[in-house]
Length: 56
Image (cartoon, rainbow, N blue to C red; front, side):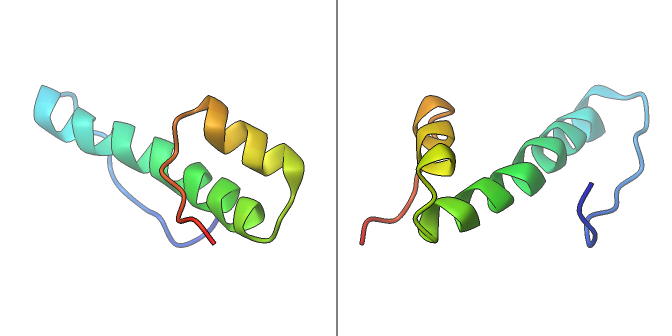
C-alpha cells in the first residue's frame, strides 16, 4: 500500500463510494506514473483498465 492516502470506512453507502474511489485511484496513480515513464506492462495495464492517460 502506498503512503499518503487515508480514509475511514463507515458502513453507509455514500462514504463507501469514497472508499471505492480511494482504493481504485491510489493504485491507478502508480500505474499512470509507470506508464508515463514508458514501461510497456504499465501501459498495457492502463489500457486494459480504461485509465485515461495523457498522450505524449
